[in-house]
Amino acid sequence: MTTPPVLDPAPVHLTRPAASRPDYASRSVPRHLARGAVGFGLIAGAVALVPVAGPVGLLAALPALVAFRGCPTCWAVGLAQTISRGRLERRCADGVCTLTTAPVRRRRPGGSRG
Image (cartoon, rainbow, N blue to C red; front, side):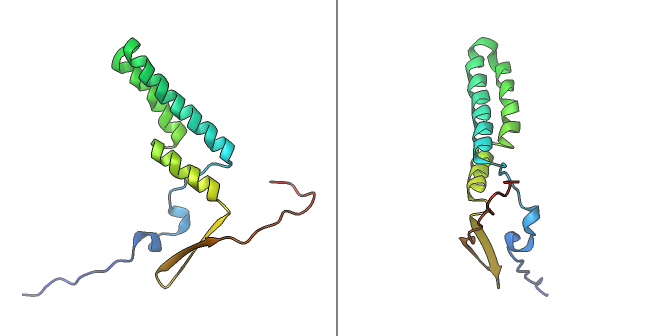
């Protein structure tokens, strides 16, 4: 009787390219906060409609999922990604990943923000 070989796969975050990881960030922090305000407003409105419209009022919370790009936790992860975008840099070598501050990029005088 032989035993099957034991496979030791690399962690998923080391095998997937960065482009295939979920990205919930927005273009800017104010834009992301506006999406959050819309999402949380829709959820509050849906809960407020329950006494008037019954459980059907909860359907008003569905557009909040679009504003959040998923659930409220996805929105919070996106807020962290939006704030840290360009400020942190992830480097992986020999199966060990580290998070460091990215080098400061100075804008050229008179250049556009693009």
